[in-house]
Length: 233
Image: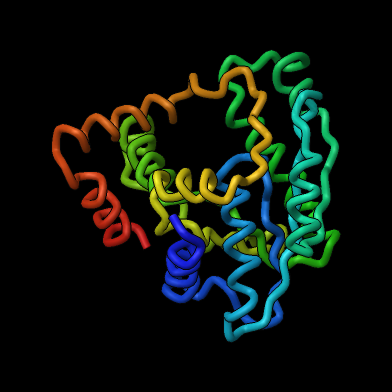
């Protein structure tokens, strides 16, 4: 995927759901993976031609595994002229050692989001951008159907009243394969996730399930997404 196509996906999402207004300061959550780095590149590019002026800062919550190297991401942000902050935490130790969670993802996500929200407020941000793409939304819908018995997915725009922050998801129209293609083409500096349960979660199971369904019923993944847009927002 070329940059122009990425910008078109993001601009469509921003305009369809009025994600960005003039004067916004947006914290981009950077995990170190392909999705968040692609989102950072996209929003930084969008700034150059979007009619409403806005600013971005990049924030990484370091979970404390001690083996994730963010130096190349620092260089990447510097090249983009984007302010970059790393929050040091002991989330990994709390989740895997102190609490010994058998299903650690929920607690980890809650703590990670809490740290990100606090830093965003400290930096004067009024919005946070998450890098959920089209496949993430479809998989979340299936997770909800299978494990919760309801048709549900996170919204493109979510207001967090307790923090007075708005979460936006500008990559929502971008398929994961396009994000992978963009990441490879532009050689984004991925810092691999060191989490011990990465690739062994319910989400990974659902990802494989959706892939199989689409192979057996070509085009059904796109129909799932359309059903989601028509039914939830």
